[in-house]
Image (cartoon, rainbow, N blue to C red; front, top):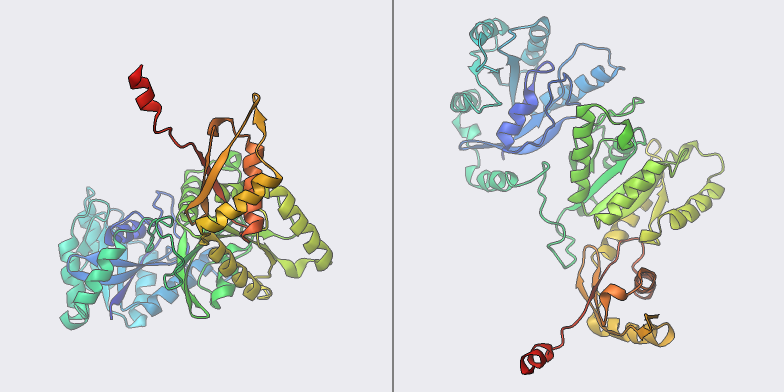
Length: 477
């Protein structure tokens, strides 16, 4: 088995920068603002010939448990319990702070092996901070520069010394393969091009992004699904900043859930950090297969909700709506009928979209939500044979042929499915540029109804077949 390393320390000492360095990708958000990281993030990492899992944590702060910093600290304490080794990170440039000594005592009481990482050692005057780090009583500080990649050989040797060679090199061959694969991902997970696999395969982890406006209950929903307080939650809006992934098994089906930052209207976003958070969430959408759009049932279908849904559909992802906070609704049956009618009317791009009322607080409706996710995923991966498509097309042309444009009738020759994820079809016709968009929408809706493909985007590309004799005719002239 591989070992786990937790990177801890007070805010703004460079924990996320070190995490990114070990992972080999810029996965965690990094900014000069203290307290950027809030949730704990786990990922496969590599330090030369050492392969392990690394945990990025929020800055350790001394605060009451009920406050946001206090809940962030609780997540860090969980990381300490899970870890086999702790990287106690300090800022060598600024030297020791009182909080460093307080948290060093907590780490000492945990009984876990510790490596003191003196980050920002490249800075002028860092030698003084390095010497101060001896006062922690946790052993020799290792000078590194996470930003520039300096000092990593010494850090490797310190890991081996702290764990012992047998533990550090445990199952090197298997871990090496895992680490190599992990270094190829984009936003922190085993993500390949979701459009590259045409057939339905339920053995691979399904990638599900959970998105919505701030304070809609995204993190609470994921915690309710997996049955543990894995993600930081609270009444404050905008707690989540990074796109954090959680591995989960639902009735034998492997899933990867991506929690994302709340997305506000672009005009309201001013801070650089929020821009970075939203961009991270957009990447999660683009590499997801299913996207659960969490709407606050007390104030659903605001303009931003519709813009988020439209973005997901344009990206070709498979959307599922979760009407959250259903426990706060007084007349649920009446409201549900109204919301489903609004879903059909306001989001015609994916007619028949699955919409499920849930309560992340009470756990109501979670099984129905996951049933909707599985059903939508199958539709998103569905394929129709060319024979069935062209028999369908014959009936369409007999009952509702394309209109005449400029006095000339448009001719459709055949249709075939070119791809799945989402379903994409190619229609061969005489003049693609003249085909009215209203007729293309008619074809799309008819396809959806005839082959039972509700709630997912359907792509239709118009093509014209070249006249094989056109070139020869020109040559004769």
